[in-house]
Length: 312
Image (cartoon, rainbow, N blue to C red; front, side, top):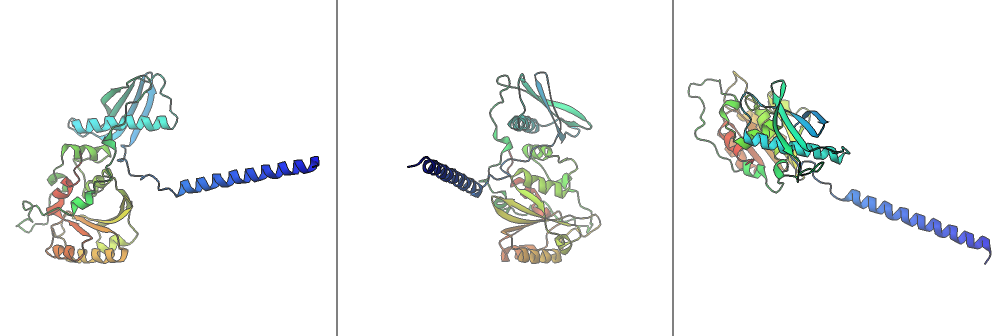
């Protein structure tokens, strides 16, 4: 065999080997892309950070969390301290060196000024403590299924005088310590929260991805309605929040529920939730019986709705 033929065979063999290597790598990358990605809502929403710096042996994280006028609860302090460690962990994952760092200082906002809540001592220089589960969501639990079990609170009754004045949500809904802490941690001022603040906050800290619904839907249900789409574990849910406006009738009109039912029929979500701080009409119960996807949370059910999330 001549030298030229030998060289040709070697070149062809090298080309085939390179082609096979490229093909195998392309197939592996394609298979990896086809794998289901980790849920983007496996962790609770992190508090917004307004300031972060490392000075000396201390890494400082300041959260835009309103503390209000009272002392922060134990639950809120614990939650923010864990969130502070996880924020630094994300920074380290993105390349931040922790050389010489021995402590993490966590603060939240008292008015316009940061207030130190805790200082975490690292187990060793530059070594973060093990993650805690306070910032994670157990996706096995299904708050919406629990919501479907809510009942009317007989202690909540429409005003007998016929007045249209109703207490705002933040005055009549009671929050447990952990629930208030979780809401405050994502920026909800529980001393002045609206119905939307309460509902969307509970859903977000329970692992729901919340996005604004399609244009035009709000007007079709009611002028004060806001419509959102929810996703969690691959399941879609339509959410309608209809606020009571001062001076309007305190009872939900059946026409609003009828328009809600039409939107559900057209969009065909797996579930649909209607939340309002108005009182419920009797027709609501009949609509729920006809379509098991519908869950109506009216003023009489709001407290049970909040409690059903079981935040701890």
